[in-house]
Image 1 (tube, rainbow, N blue to C red):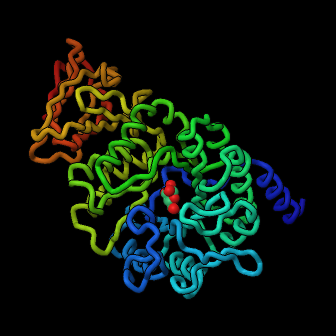
Image 2 (image 1 turned 45 degrees about the horizontal axis):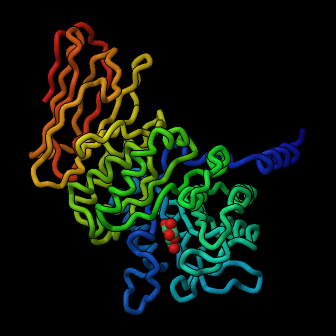
Image 3 (image 1 turned 60 degrees about the vertical axis):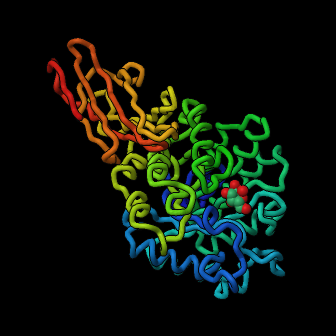
Length: 426
Ligand code: GLA
């Protein structure tokens, strides 16, 4: 068979099957405009904040110089409000001419020159949520345009379109993206619009056709909002975890760390739970003015490693008792069939003093076949964790003291040690 024919065959096969772009084998990491920069389009009064070439270029520079790219944050994406209100004479989307004076390909090229990947936003409906042109009647053209610009990541929102059309339209657009020959990570908003309207999403199809998808309401800049999303994911985590895996992830929305609404403890809880959930880690903050504390948290190697763990199993909320929620994720290394586990105890009580909790391995659903090596993460001086392991007497429990709205976190790694009378670690 000659080479051309094989290529043709491959492209025929891939265009006739669902999304198969080989992307997002672990949860995507990057930076996105929306949460912090919204639809700010007035560059005269807010030159440093408006959705513009300047914002993307300066952020791309900082992602590299400040170590975000090295830590794994390799996408930089523009959300809504980047385009002109009118398409051009060929019906192609056009980047706003004042804010993107050199066009979108220039921005993509710059991003690529920095070793980053470029993301953009569209909407499956007639308009984007912010009122800019939507993709509904222009799917082929928009997929091609994104491909031509060198886009690596497309978020397709779902405003201004019938929910019933989504089951067909979202896979169709994914296929069109694939057909461009350029691998583009595909972030769908399909299930959130359906689920919030009481329609049961077609999960088999979503998993097959999207690399990630929004499940719930937009995150806002407050602990209230983070908790609201945590509670939803907590209540549904055993179901949602079954949808996640290499190439396809639930998305509880962007990280708001570095902005205005969270205390340091709350920021830790946010990052910890997103790590356990195997959530995409999409920073949305101004990297020029971020505090060292917030930056260190976003760059925390242990949390990122949990988020990106190669077992690729999303974690669950095991329980929420007396305001302490236990989040747990199975991670590497694995000893025979026993995985390591990452545990995050989030204290939802804001009453002032750190809160005490004491839990057996059984109620935490932790396998007691092995003893575990213990590693503490994110502990602050007002917190403590004590792990008691005694298989002989079958007394295994963890005691925690957790700051109000904070998190106490640890990793347990199974070891070969058996028949040791008891092991404490404080
Ligand atoms: C919706 C999405 C947000 C953001 C805005 C943009 O609300 O859920 O993430 O993209 O639209 O208008």
